[in-house]
Length: 421
Ligand code: EPU
Image 1 (spheres, rainbow, N blue to C red):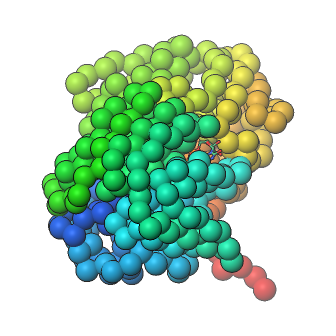
Image 2 (cartoon, rainbow, N blue to C red; image 1 turned 135 degrees about the horizontal axis):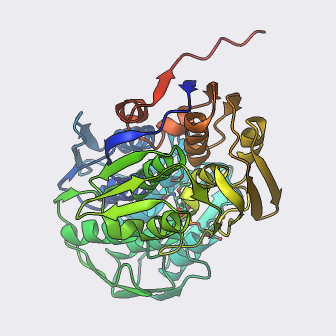
C-alpha cells in the first residue's frame, strides 16, 4: 500500500524515465535478430522485468543494468513458444506473436493480460497476420500463429490500434515484398519502434503518418538504441503538479509529444513553459473547468484521462470527460467518490462537479493509470490516504516514491496488513 499525507503542493524537478509502451515492443522486437541489441533508457518497472523474464524463458540471453541498459541477444532462441503464466501478466506479451511469426513463421503465447479497462479485442492483429499469410488459432486460452510464408499485403485497419499496428510491423519486416498499413496508429511509440527496427536494418517508411510502408528485408542485425521518454509518465507529473497547485519542472521529455496535455492544462488556467527537453508547470491551485475527450494521438491520451479527471475535481465549475477508447476506464471514480468527489458517470461520459473537496480514505488502485489517479487524489486530499493494490502502479512508474518525495510529497510504501481468515 501507499500511505500519502496530502495537501502539499509539489515543487521541484522530476526526471522522466524511458517510455514503457515503447520499451516493451522494442524488447519483443529483439527476437527478430540473432545479434546483440543494446537498448538504453529502459524504464526499471515491473512490466519490463516481466517481459525480459519471458525473453529469457524462451532462450534469450538478457541483462538489464541498474541504470536501464538492456543487453539482449535472442540468437539462441529456437522457437517462440511462450505458454507460461508470465505472458498473462501484461498486454505487451502479444508482441511476441508478431516478432515470433516474423522470425520463425510460427508463435504461440498464452492470451495476454494487462489492465482491465474494458473489452480489448485483438481482431485487428489477427486480420493483419492473416493478410500476411498466417493461420491464427485461439484455443484453451492460447493464441497460435503459423505461416508457410509471409507475403507483404495491403492492410486497412478498421480501428486505430497501437498494438495491431506494431504487431503487423513486426510480422512484416522480414516478409517477402511490400506491406502497406492504412489507418495505422501514429503515437510516438509507433515511430520509436519503427526507428528501432530500422536501426536493425528494416525498411519502414511513414511511421507516425496515415500510411506505413514496409519493404521486407532478408535479416535484421543488432544495434544500439535509446528509448524515447515516457509521454504518459511526464503527463502524470505535469497533471499532479497542476492539481496540487505546485511548480514542477518535468525534465528529459520531448515537449512536442506533450502538446495535447499542454493545451488542456493551459485551458484549465495552468501556466506551462516549454523548453527544449523540459516543461515547467506552475499553478496557483485556482483551476477552470474544461471538457476532455480521449482520442488516438495527437488527441488527448486515454492513459491520462484518469489523472486529469482527478485534477478537475479541484476546478471551479463542471467538466465533462468523454472516454472514447475504453468503455471500462471509469471504474476508479467510485474510489474518488469515497474521498468526497462529485462525479456522475453515464456510459462513456463523466461529469465532474469541481467542489475542491477531497479527503483521505482507504482506496484501491484498479489498474495502472487508475493507480496514478489515486496517487494524485491522495496528494491533493486533506489527511491520510491509503492506496491498496499499488502493484499496478509499479508495473508502469519507475521510482514513483523517490520521484514524488523529491517533489516534497509525503508518501511512503508500507506492507499490506495480512488478511484475516
Ligand atoms: N481494438 C480493437 N481491435 C484490436 C485492437 C484494438 O477493436 O484488434 C480497439 C480497443 O478495444 C480500443 C482501441 O482499439 O478501443 C485502441 O486499442 P489499442 O490496440 O490501441 O490499445 P493497446 O495496444 O492494447 C496500448 C497501450 C495501453 C493504452 C492503449 C491506448 C501498450 C502495452 N498498451 O494498448 O496502455 O491505453 O494503447 O492508447 O502499449 C497503459 O499504459 O496504462 C495502457 C493501458
